[in-house]
Length: 73
Image (cartoon, rainbow, N blue to C red; front, side, top):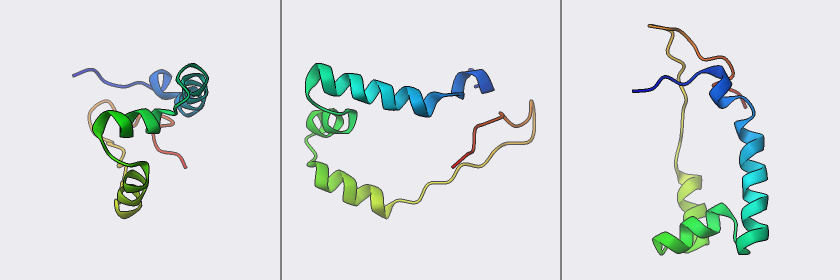
């Protein structure tokens, strides 16, 4: 298994915004819309399902230590 480094995740949130914008220009659909279309799920259902889920990120402090920038809000 490859270990993520801080370099791997720095700026990822902004890259996703840019990627989504490019997808919209090229396909007329956002990443979420493409995922919903491909899986046969209505976007409203997807949003409702996401509102019900709880997600947590727990940094691991053993081994090679915490990856900087991994947990931010």
